[in-house]
Length: 382
Image 1 (cartoon, helix red, strand yellow):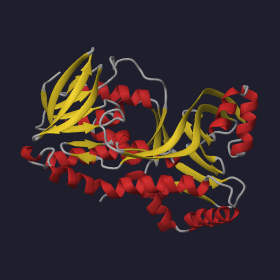
Image 2 (image 1 turned 90 degrees about the horizontal axis):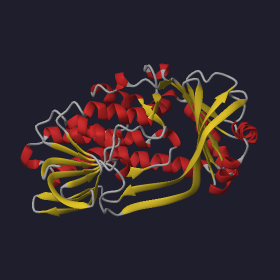
Image 3 (image 1 turned 180 degrees about the horizontal axis):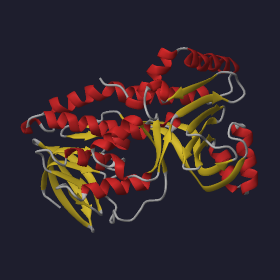
Image 4 (image 1 turned 90 degrees about the vertical axis):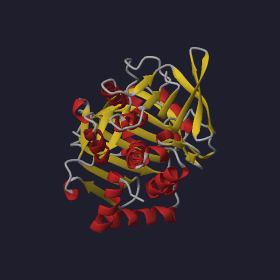
């Protein structure tokens, strides 16, 4: 563990590891603090939806070519249960090979850290950042490792997970849980992702190999009951909820759940520190924006750092410049996902009619569809 580094990144998940790789060949010394004691141990399998824009970032780092469990999404089908109106977003219409990709979170994490091991970045495992405070022209970090507290200084502390830092956060509980599982279907998915809005919340099916990754949103009580159902009963309930677009559901495995809400930092920048990824914002999984937003945080922060003189690293002017550059994208992502949850998770007859008109308009107005697709894939620059 180095007592001082130009940049210290707290959190070695995919967003923090991506930032470390983006800065690995810069003129700045970089140290990564990760709570996990052994990065060689694979994490639990978890599905991740990456946009095509995120693929481009990972390609620049040499990570993308090492991933094997990758399923392209070439079409997104959007509909609502019990109402007219639907929309299709197609990669071919955007002149792209895919709109996004379904990858395994654990495999991506392993690939990023394999690349990090070939760099000069100092990766410290089994350590947690307990506190951060400004001191003069630096940030002072208290790091806990093996029951010993270490004091580290840095020109810029980057908080890339939700555990470190003490910033005030805005939170909203949606009163929903997400049930996640892997399901097989009678008909092939043909690389199409389905987003189905219902009064209980959205249900998504993402192509994953020959199967589909399911994200089923409902009340905590409903999700708890669904988790306890025998397989045949669960599949019948899913078919009734989702519809017949992929025929019958044949099997389900790896059922689990987690609560859903909105959380974001009211002040993502403070003296000599900045929050990115889940530390800066955690969104509802509808539209799959959260992780991609975090990767764009890492990309643009690295871009700002590289263009600043060494003496300006962590300065108020540098951090304000980064925040202005990211504001449109982050605020837009927060507003968009929150609006979708609030607008579609109800059975209001007037809103149902308006939603039908909105989906029909999205399908019938190519410039609007193109704008929405590009924002989802590449975000927005401030």
